[in-house]
Image 1: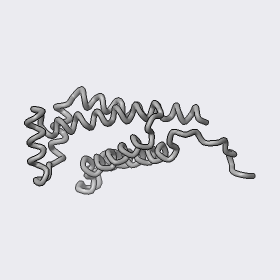
Image 2: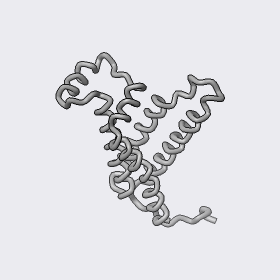
Image 3: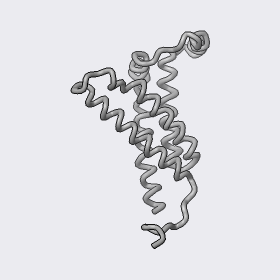
Image 4: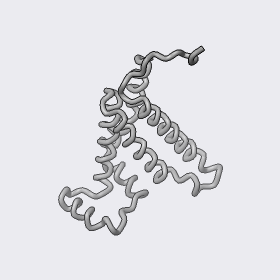
Amino acid sequence: MPAFVTFGRILFAVLFIYTGATKLFAIQATADFIATKVTVPEMVTPYTQQVEQATGMTTPQLLAIAIGALEIIAGLMIALNFGVRLFAMLLIIYVAVATVLFYDFWNQVPPENGKMLVDALKNLSIIGALFMIMGYGRATRPVEAAYGDV
């Protein structure tokens, strides 16, 4: 069983490693997409302007880099079985927020919202898998009977 869990974690982590790398390789395209969906609250604007001036990058570009780095690092840590619960929780938060912000299927009429709805449900199943990874954690479980105590 532990070999299957390890193999499953590695295969699962490939999703985040790949998507994080694609975000980092196309930072401007990712930043443009983020800019269409995310608005910076006025309360935070003075701070984001300071960060933009210090880095010479826009807030969407900085978010694209941060998200890409989070996906790659979290994917590697889950694959390597190090800090699994922490990184699974970070990815749960990220995927949940991204689903609400980027897949607004509730604002579309039913025939046209099919792809958005499927993508949102896909993200929901990814969150479920992350909860399983978080619940299993790093430690191996003792050998359990396949069908309970019979």
